[in-house]
Amino acid sequence: MSQVELIMPKMGESVFEATIIKWLKNEGDKISLDEPVLEIATDKVDSEIPSTTEGTLVKKLFKEGDVVQVGKPIALISTSTEAHSDTVKITPHTTNVKQQTTNVSASSNGGHVSTPVLEVASVEKTSSSGKFYSPLVRNIAKTEGVSIAELESISGTGKDGRVTKQDIISFLPNRKKGIVVEKKPTVSVHEISAPPVIVSGNDEIIEMDRMRKLIADHMVMSKRTSPHVTSYVEADVTNLVKWRDKIKNEFEKREKEKITLTPIFAEAIIKAIKDFPMVNVSVDGTKIILHRNINLGLATALPTGNLIVPVIKNADRFNLFGLTKTINDLATRARANKLVPDEVQGGTFTFTNVGVFGSVMGSPIINQPQAAILATGVIKKKPVVMETELGDSIVIRSMMFLSLSYDHRVVDGMLGGSFLRRVADYLEKFDSTRAI
Image 1: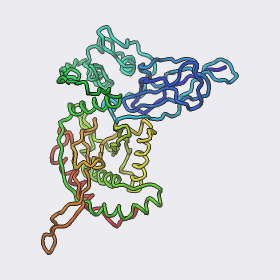
Image 2 (image 1 turned 120 degrees about the vertical axis):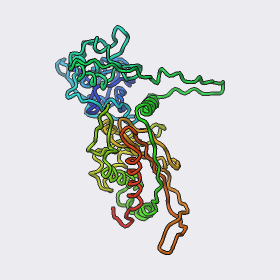
Image 3 (image 1 turned 90 degrees about the horizontal axis):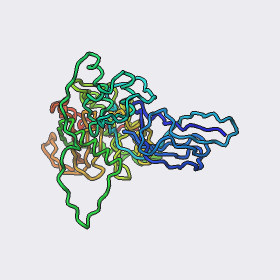
């Protein structure tokens, strides 16, 4: 009988470790090919790891709650194949996403480590002072020769003051120059005393699930990171509403799927980003990172009530038909928990449609480390005063509000307002005769 190592798979370019949430199989259980063995979580996605072979789970190499690096064996599976007892190393070729929120860790987009080191670093997981260091941070420390004393001197910006990948990467250049950087202590959300909540006998206490906790942390982090400003504009979208009403039945009959207004909104946003590229940026300290690629994130509500943000990479390369197909595919697979990790990271600008819930407008929170997020409200018919050659007249038009929340550190009111107005202009000037 031979044994096969089940390996922690690579789940994205910036993902180097994952936490085991739950073992779905116990030692001694029979396992079929591609049957889920355990659930894992990264700061990007929750995933199920399938078995790469048919056999019996012989040994779990890690416990629930352990952090495991990509490429490390996590279990041993005994196969029924008659062979020598050598252990075979096989990496799962795919993972299925369960539920997730969008780009929850801003630190995953900062810095670059060319090759992840998969050996366990000599630095202890928990230092003598009680500080916790993740496997990724310990590996970077080992590779760069950072001592435990130097690690202790780094002021962590992660949860409970933990040192993140971005913290140690930011520390390295100053260390090599012999510069000691004194960080002012930052106030952690966990150190702020929240007002007491009075619970009565009729109240129900509901524990947040992991995704909701990640969303909560990400939203608080975003508000603390960026000075938010929100601008609003109203747009007359009568032409595009009439166009969709005219072609939607033919499109659905031909393509076996529906066409919504979302790809039209996406197209207008992409065009406006090309006109005003400085909204497609990120902030790294005192540096502005101008993203040449337009990777458009689409906030998508899940059946659970949580949120995920799949990303259309290089969205400016798609025409309206391509955007329609891609958006429908991403939204369908997001709700069915079938996205892959790379499809929920790398966004440079996010769009959310609050109008689908009946909201007139919204002031969305920026999806860090991006600098802006646009929201579209519900479309309603209204009496509108229109100027004509024969004078002013009151007509019924389909109107909607658009809002843009932006990071005032790098996007001023003129840029934010001009960009938002340009998106509205593209929607208002939509060609109602175009084919798709």
